[in-house]
Amino acid sequence: MNSFTKVFGVLMACLLLFSTFGLSRADAFCYGTRNYLPPLFGEVDYDEYDGLSAYIEVEPAFTEFMYLIATDSRGNERARIRITSMDESEMFMAPVTDREGQEIEVKVKSGWIHVPQKSLKLSPGDYDFYLEVSNFDSRPETASGSKITGIATDTQCGRATLQSDAYEITIDAIPNSDFPGFIDIKDEYLLINLNLTAEYAKGKFSLLIIDENGKVVKRNALGTKKQQFSSRSISLEPGTYKVQLEMILSGKTTLSNAVTWVIQREFIDLGLGVGQSFPGKITITPSGAITITLQGKQDTLSQYDFYFIVRNADGKDVRHLLIDPKNPSLAAKELSLPTGLYSLTLKIYDPRSQQTINSESIYYTANQSGQIIVFIDGQLQTYNKPPVKINSRVLVPMRAVFEAFGAKVDWDEATESVTATTNGDVIKLTIGSKIAYKNGQPITMDVPAILYNNQTTMVPIRFVSEALGATVSWDNYSNSVIISR
Image (tube, rainbow, N blue to C red; front, side):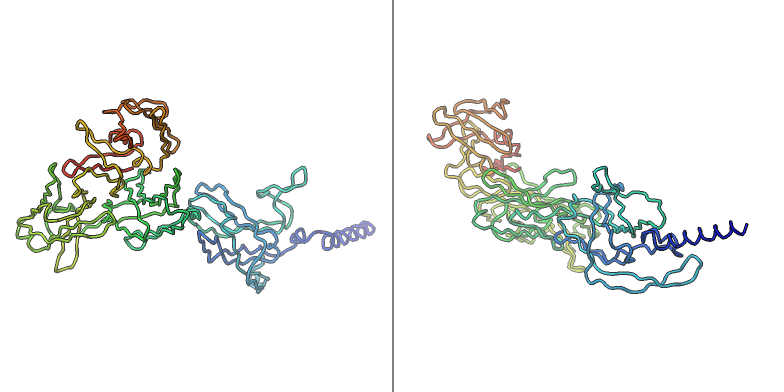
């Protein structure tokens, strides 16, 4: 028994020496007396231009294998980025409790990490970001010896993978550096900034307002200067919208990155007894007369000031008229508006509270030219050959209208035919024929296309709608064609 005891003691001593000096550092953690500190991941800041920055604290044994992880709303991992350095790093001692309840101190390394935007490579959406650290290489080896991504479960003594708390971050679309402009939202205003170098001078720019169903509900043509719009000036209902800039240049359409615009419902109870509806409206008769209707008792209405507001295509007030609630009639000739497209709005002002409410706007066209005029997306068009009316049908110059939509238009003199291409669509027609073709499918026109004065191809306005998918209307009182996309 004494021999056995001696042999057993020698074996145990050898095992202890081998365990202490022959194992890796990770295996030596088998004999630790505490749990590891989870990493701290805080003061997280995300910028769509610069990327993500955060302050971290990690035990030194875990700094070799650090990863920034991003998971989507379903918990699927969408990014795993190796962190190899810390800025402004420092070492300090942190108190922990060992497994026997005694307080001890361990070393902790702190510092800042930065992950550039181009490394994130994430599509727009909501993500949970957290820091994952290991004291071993958690990526298993393939047969070829190369590493593959992912976390392997490792049950060997002393090896550990730790995770921090998560931070939720919304990733917006990365700004399109190729677009010569951007949109700012300040309070209730959209601020449009265009940087028009010589390269973009011939481009046609529009502001697009897109509702929650993805439908373009407003399209405003833009000038070359800085412009601003309010929800009132472009007659938008309360809701959430996506706003983008559009550029058409050399037949190609380019969009800026979108921004979200939330318009809150405006209601101030002025005690007019009409619920949450505006107590009045503006209508325009087929002859062009402007009618104002106000609701409520006269003694109540008389407590407020009523204004009739006219805004031009740029959203600027051009008329601001005080109206009598007892006789709110208004003659169009009183406005003396130059040729153009305008929005008409009613405003109520309460002198006691100094608050105002506004009605919905309606559009009104004014024409002092004596000719048929055309508006595209609210902007008055100027043509060498103006539109004409033949047999009660209004015809417009095809090339000018189609090019305003970014189409490329070619004329074949030998066959007297026109071919227009836009956004992958091919439209063909022949002078004198009522049949045109869009991508090979026939379109029947009210009247045939004509070559006016042997110079300009003229087509009926209904054909513009069918060929381009545009909305086309006719204001008889002002001899105006209104086209919008």
